[in-house]
Length: 131
Image (cartoon, rainbow, N blue to C red):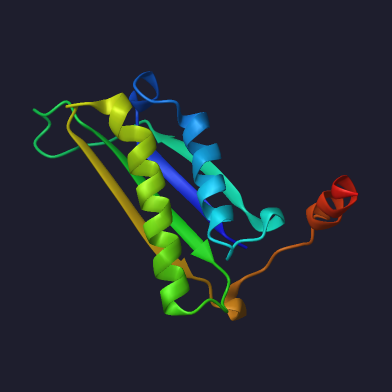
C-alpha cells in the first residue's frame, strides 16, 4: 500500500510535466521491489494558496509524502525514500533550471489500528490482465 501524494506550488505545471512526474515516481517505487504494482497510488495536488519565503522570491515547491503499510524495515524505507527523491530530482531539475525551488519528501508508516479501507479488486484485475 504505498501511496505517494505530492503537493506543488501553483504554476509549477507550466515549467514541469507533472503527469510525467507521477509516472516516473510510480516506476521508481516499482523498481525498489518493495511496492506491489496494485498497491501503488501516486497523486498530485496543486496548492492554490501559498506564501513562500519572503514573497519576493518567485520560487516553487514540490512536497512529497509516502505513506506505507507496516512490514518494511528501516533500510527498505530509506532505500524507497532515496529512490523517490532521486527520481523526482532527475525529472524536475532539467525543467526548472535556475528557478528557486524546494523539493521535500517524508515517509510515514501507517499504524494499522487507525487505518480503514475497502478492497477495490485492482490486484485481481492486474492478475487477470497479466494472463
